[in-house]
Length: 500
Image 1 (cartoon, rainbow, N blue to C red):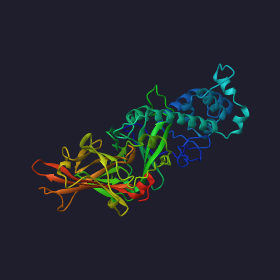
Image 2 (tube, rainbow, N blue to C red):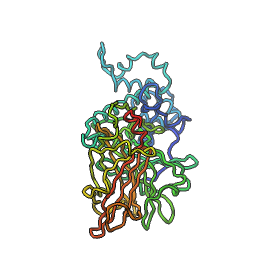
Image 3 (cartoon, rainbow, N blue to C red):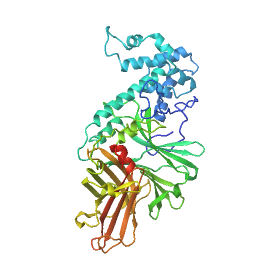
Image 4 (cartoon, rainbow, N blue to C red):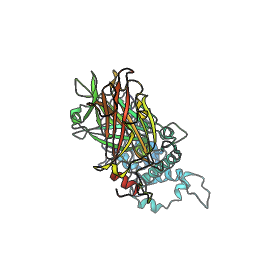
């Protein structure tokens, strides 16, 4: 069964319980998180072997036979807490239906969320639960109050995280306490490898590093499925369904999956190869995924995900297992300035790998003009060829660090690029974290330097980044002699309500 670090990946169960024909994951409606209201279908992903083992152990002590009358089983189940009751429902089909009993869950719900105002004293959980109209419990479909309880708990988690993420750094436009939010929520990440025959493997992350504006997550050291059998890879955030801020979050319990991105692995070797060394080649999949393949076997060596801090916690916690979190609709602030949306930008750029930063720069008051709009993009020059005082060195020898349980290495001329572009109001306009590589160019029309000219390019649906560098042989370092952003005009029009 999927477990902690170093455990062998196992096929994923097909539902909350293998005994039901129900899908494990319910789809969230657009713009809403799963479980946001009573009408939503809520399911919980319980797959930790340790919890199920404990449940079996307790039940084997309590039950001489699994054929005991339902009334007796319900009496026993009434003494279980929410986590144990959810896990008990995974034992078999019969337990699943019994563990969905509304009377069990209304007791748990009423104890956790008692009425705010009451004209009578409540001496026990039984009296609190008894205050609920019996008909209202019976009239609801089986599992209704379980879903309500989970939805309410998820709402509590969202509210707590919203408070933590409220303070924003005025210089970066990003939440100040992202690291704290990750810690208190018990947030982790998994990849779900799906074979062409539908078989799935869930793999816990092995290592992660939190950078200035992004997080880098690693998976390695596992007996990977054969690449030829794989069709897709899902990247998901996982959090405990029930968050207790007074306790350290536990992996051994029901956890919530939030789909961040889905990648196609069917033609991985035809994707963009950005580099390699004597042991492996690395391929980049947008957004932000890096896959390492052993050269000899053409099989998986490691997977690396790079996630920008902007909306990181929301994307990792508020989606469902099948539908990513959808950003709230943006309402533009209108202005009659004839060049509104073309000035006042602030850029922060990092280039790093393995905790080593090759570049860390902030550029303010960036602007452009209508005349720089071409082919659906507007051009913003950040560092100009013509201004030598703007040119910046990359510190150290640029390379992308990788590791597995046996080998490690550093692939030359590759790194992770983090971009945070703020609008004139200091709000994040375009953010990403992605692997990039330097490629050799021919003779440049730029300043006359003795050395090879290289470039770094990045493209996504919102814009492009083009960097040109010159290798200075005397000092053995790269200098950035040009840095240009190309923003999609459609994005600017949508964001600012303009019509360029």
